[in-house]
Image (cartoon, rainbow, N blue to C red; front, side, top):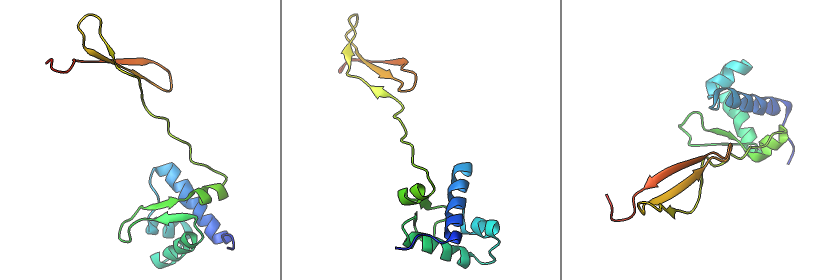
Length: 125
């Protein structure tokens, strides 16, 4: 398959940049405004070309802000998705030596600080 045209590449860069800056993807109208396109049909044609080349995906037909740049699109832009670390690591429960309650230890993966949550043993209120 032939790579993206210059216009498609500029559109892909705009979609990724807009998404990073605003936390949501652009609408067809926002794409039109940015590129000076008078009709949303023209913007939709650009998106269809990017979809055919596997550089973006688009959600439901009647929903806005559903454009997602694919891994292939990110690779073309020289970017990758960064994995999001889990917020908390869970360790096996232990028993409290004083009251017998179940003690769960949670560890923050970023700073390794421990958070403790005391949970009463089964049957206790």
